[in-house]
Image (cartoon, rainbow, N blue to C red; front, top):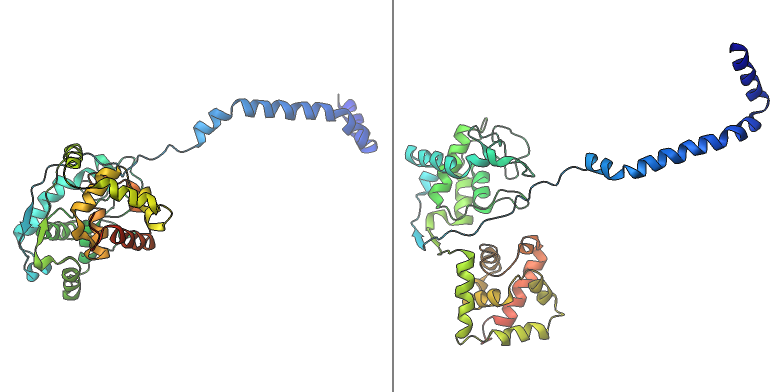
Length: 311
């Protein structure tokens, strides 16, 4: 056997091209077989290597019934230095609306956190805060939410509830939480009018709202005229944006016509347009509008139904 192996090696050295010509068909056959096996098992390979799609964390249930109410102004001193009762109320609120995702220990491992992408905030970690661990940053998150995550806006809470919740989170979970500065409290008040009170509008389930709004077609509101106006200038940038974010044009146009007061400023318009999207006949594409598109949409709506346009 040793002698035969030695002869083969000598032959390869002397006639490498002839040897390659002899073994080439066998090598090619092996390559083809391996390729066929790979192709036949491609679906299995993909199932094992492709990560499962993360659960859509932006899905929301139907709206609850909320009665309209007036929120009294909050004392500026209580924002920086809340009473024990306010903080205790914040703890109660945390256990009610936050524990399911953030967990009792604030580490973002609650029972509702599974499958959320990105994962809920771990309050005990100092890394990767979107708005920072300062009091003003946490309050901003509660007020506005974090787009692209499961953290929705809790702007329906009263200022005092958000203040208590923010302080409870900082006092209980945040390590080395920076002290509350008077300047940031004043800036928060200027941004969110905490000391001026707040009017919370009424809210009803989407299905009920659709029935009420559709029934208003029998009133003396000429929706078709507005629809024709939009169709007539459908090539305008603002008309294209409005069409893209609209789920039900009758409901959305009725809502716009009954709420012309939101056109006073672009900021107020944007805030109200994103408040109850499904209820108002729009779709979730509205959250993807850029700042420039918001300006174009605001100007377009003003153009077709602002002052001087009796539709």
